[in-house]
Length: 126
Image (cartoon, rainbow, N blue to C red):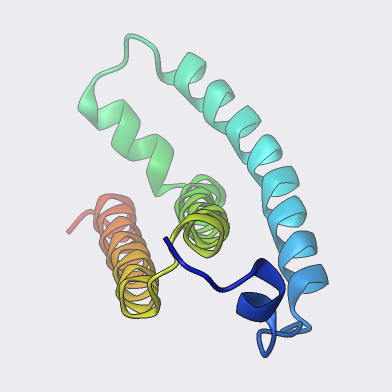
């Protein structure tokens, strides 16, 4: 149990001046995800019962491949923004916080790279 009061603990941790940007980025990515998930539902219904060749042909369209890539990147970006808030609010040990930020961002970047490469591989037929 700490004898330090909450005000003393909070001093020196002033505003990072990035809260509004973070808030807007999270809302913008959420709105974009609503549109992209609508497209994903359409694509899923259109491909229901189709075989691999039909799905590959669907993804080989530049429009559909771009939407799928945008969905993957936006979804992971939105997840990173949300996890950042959770880490900021609930992790109070600074080294652990830094490690979790790194793991979250690195995992998202790897996921984005793998997702984009697989969509391109599927779309280009390699």
